[in-house]
Structures are given as structure tokens and as C-alpha cells.
Image 1 (tube, rainbow, N blue to C red):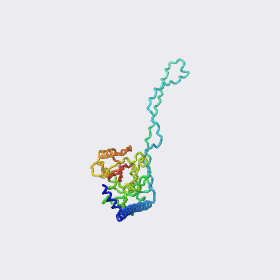
Image 2 (image 1 turned 180 degrees about the vertical axis):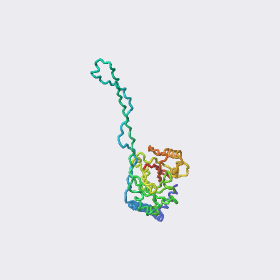
Image 3 (image 1 turned 60 degrees about the vertical axis):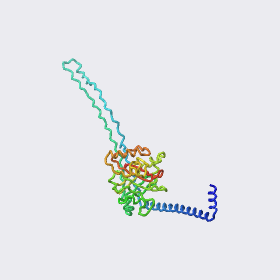
Image 4 (image 1 turned 45 degrees about the horizontal axis):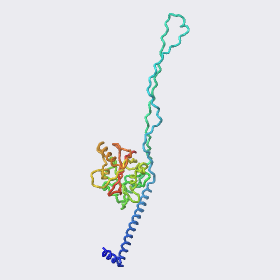
Length: 332
């Protein structure tokens, strides 16, 4: 061992070797610095692109009230049926003349019957009317749609950075995986519909977006894993507006960790992303049962057969080839 260390020491004492080592580390630093600089430049360009796109949306999305059932007025209490007491026969007073002895028989007294009270019916609660936005989705995003017809809508989650157009290319569903809104190369891509179907023909619409280090695209979905911070409770609604279906608000009911693998079960994220139609109630119930089994925490919400679903998918880095799947049901 001593001979080996002696040779290494002799080798490093050579000036030429030291120069080569120094040059190597300098080049390594330059490569790292250029990589960081490139990443920052691309991030800056990406932010400028989105600022430009969002700036073209001249008006704000009209607020839509989540439907709630409230009584229109305070209902009157329902009366419990009561049995009216048997009336006591009322005898009319006898005139003074009738007190005198007479052969005429006394008249038969009349009985007065008091009618039973009619119960007041309890009024049915009236659902709170849902305001219809004055501005259509077409008008809201008209300028962007004119620039790129691949745009089919807009997705956003209040209180997060998720606020982007959604693209859809049936011939190549992953076209916008590494393309920006204008079709130029971008590591950020644009959120897109994960499938070649028409939105109105499926029961479960699936959207995919990148998980970027700077917190853009679908990165904020990762916060739903932090159930101890109750993140879901304050960010439970996803807005997904489309030209085909109009305004849409969805309530998140499940968050699942999965993988991009070849397994034929729910450990594979495609179990959720490729299930877009349900053949029957039994098929739907089986899907929801598996979703609830894999759910990271119980939201207390169970969709019913006939509900429209929305699934958001992004990368998840706590394990190899991880994917985070967020499922929501349409409430408006």
C-alpha cells in the first residue's frame, strides 16, 4: 500500500499533472455554471411567455358560486295531529215563559261541533340559484384561441401557480410535452389533454403537466400530499373551462401516489389516466373503490355514478418514475 501511495504522491507532484487537474475542475465549474445560467434563461423566457399569454386575457374569469341547498324561508313547524276533544253539548237557556207549567214538550238542545285545525304544510327548501356568467368562455379567451386553435380551454386552482391554457392534439397527444403555446421548444411544455377523445364523449378528462423546479406548471399539485397542513381543505376546487363544455368547477376527492411502470394494476398511474369511460355503474363503483383504497387521505367525498371526473397528473420525485394523480368531480 505504501508503494501505491508513494506513486500517487509522485504523480501529483508533477506540475503537468497539477495543471491538467486544475483545468479539469475549471471546466467542470464552467459547465455547471453554464447549465445553471441556461436554466435561469429558459425559466425567464418561460415566465415572459406566460406573462404575455395571461396578459392577453383581458377580463377575469367570472365567479361561479358552488351550488348549495338552502331554504328560501324559515319553514313553519309541522303540526302534530291532535284529536279534538268531544264537545260538551251546549243547552240553550230556557225562556222564562217555559218555566211555567205547560203541556208543550221542551225543544231538543243543538250540539255545536268544533272543526279540527288544518296542519300547515312544511315548504320544500329551494336550491340557491347559480349565477350564469355574463361572459362566455369563447369571449374570455378569444385572442388566444385565434393564435393557436390547439387551445381548448384553461385550467386554474385558486391560491396556486396553476393558471394555464390547456392544449389538445388528437393526432399526437404528447405534442405539447416539450412545446410552448406557440409551438417552440420548451422544457416546460404546456398542460394538455392526455387522450385523443372529444371532451364531451368521456366520463373522465385527464390533464398532464410538468413538475418544474421553479414551481410552475403542475408543481403545486405536490402540496396536496401534505395532508397535515390541510392544504386540500383550502385548495379543494379546480377550475377547468373549455370551449366545448363551458365553465367548469371540480372538487378534488382523492390524491394518489403511483408510478410509470408496466404493472397491470393501480400502482401504474395509467390505471387512472387511461380510464376515461365507464361501461356501467358497477364499473364506475369498482374504479372509485380502488381510488379510495389508494387515496393518501380521506376527503370524505365519494363520487356517484354519473358524475363527470377530472384527473390531473404530474411527476413525483420521492421515488423513481413517480407520478402524482389528483382526481376531482364536477360540481358546477
